[in-house]
Image (cartoon, rainbow, N blue to C red; front, side):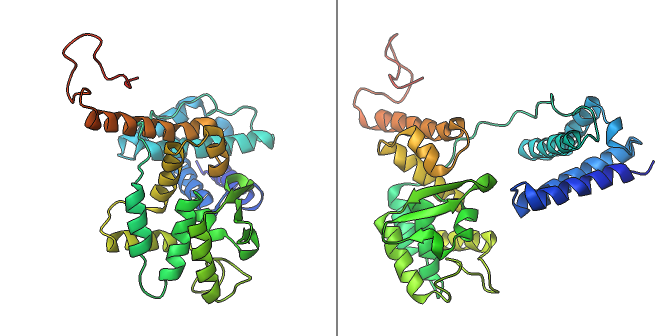
Length: 308
């Protein structure tokens, strides 16, 4: 059976995503791939119309995705794409109910965000950037670490959104939500130096080689290159953002304030950084206190007092 109705409705949904739903082009591209795979799966079942899709079909697809070796995070994203697509069709009156609405995604491993030490951050920023783009890369990393900006937010910045005098930057985050984030003196200094040599001091803060904004991939490569030059491994733009959050909490920052700075929709997302600092606190206690011990307690009641 042809899947014309499925394909047509997916195309309509993706067109809407790209034009009016505040989604990034990266998300739209991922959803296009995910929904194309689901359409192929439905075609194999002889289903050519979204009306004929049952919850069991969605569950079967997700089971197959995991069975084929996809990461659970990828399977969860595919389920999210399917839910969004059916939600869109329901809003348009093309289906009466969302068959994916009540389906829970695969359980994801609870990984803690990785952060690097303050000393490693200093080595990375001061010694890592090299070559003719060193000034640019240093300014970008100062923003990602000093203000906790996402790499996509950094790439999208324009000079009109940066106030070097008042030390604020206006950021357009996920879902087209705007927030004001303070900048530290190191970031301001690096940005002043970069602006002095910037090709267009009134356009993008970080212009691309072919005009417009620099790409996320270029900034990602710049951080990896700087980390390699500084003798560090596993450092990405996201690690810099994690390090910002972790070091803020270690310095006594309020969790709600950190939520605002990071642009998190939910406080639950921000709380994962709190667990990182607790783990580091426990490790420091065990290593530094003479009566902490490194193994199991000999007597009842002598357990690590920081253990939850």
